[in-house]
Length: 180
Image 1 (cartoon, one colour):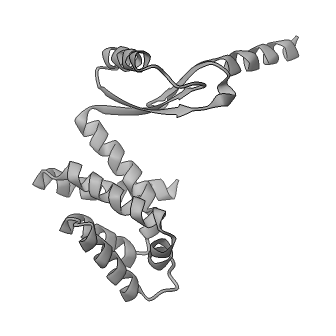
Image 2 (cartoon, rainbow, N blue to C red):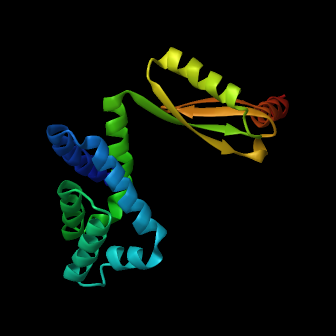
């Protein structure tokens, strides 16, 4: 819980800078590319995240990676500030919070659509269109194939869950039978 509050504060700080200079979308992309690189490369991850290395050494690595990724000074400064304050471990949470803030500003709602089998493009497009009409915002869904669902779909969107899977129906029947 505390890490969410910390992440939210840093995310709002960067967003404030991004709103002033008009680069808030770019900052999200930069944070995402840096985070993916760090978490995708074990050597860089250890060099940056492990406090047993000297702070100046870790700052040099972050600066080198930032230059290599052509990051803006705002994002680079945030990363260095996180290192100095021993908050770099919150990087993923900061990206997550920053993405939420940007999505809210841009009227985007992100969600996950779980299916037992791949969806046809027409069905996926129809689901998106129905959700856009109901919610009145842009919808971005990540489709996740989950064979354990047996059939049907489960939608997780903005904190609510719509579960129309056979697995859910079977679990409900099981609960009902056990109660009787």
